[in-house]
Amino acid sequence: MDLNKNYSLFSYKCFADLVFSCSPKIPLAYILVVGSESYGKMLAVKQLDRANPRQFHESISKNDKVDKVTKGRILRSHAAAQNGYETLPLFTGAVIASNMAGVPTSTINLLSLAYLGSRVLYNVIYIHLQENRKFATPRSLAWMVSIGCWFTLYVQAGLRAMRAS
Image: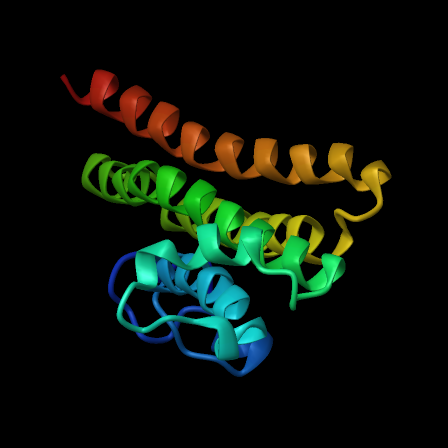
């Protein structure tokens, strides 16, 4: 992968060299969020009331037909998605700001990939491993890495903008 090419915004050759996949980073971040929510709904598709989809998590909480482990994963997949929706605008803004400020594309690409990787790790730990409370700290660390990535992009953009003025 040539990290001097800008893959962060709308390019369709983001990390094909690494995983034989072609996806832009901002839409991929959105797909990670929607994917965690969708995964939870797929676990209990028989209980999904399509007429009241926003009541799904409340009805699952009260449903005795769903076993405890599955119920926990469904509810945590929703919580992971909510967390993703909260950070997605910050990541998106950071990518745009760093591009507009002229931050080196290799820096943007590395931090964007680190953000995506930490979000995948966060989702896996939160949804699948959280029955064991020992994984609370690694989950929090994955979250902090994702925050650090977009925060660093904003700082880099700010420093570039200050130097340019």
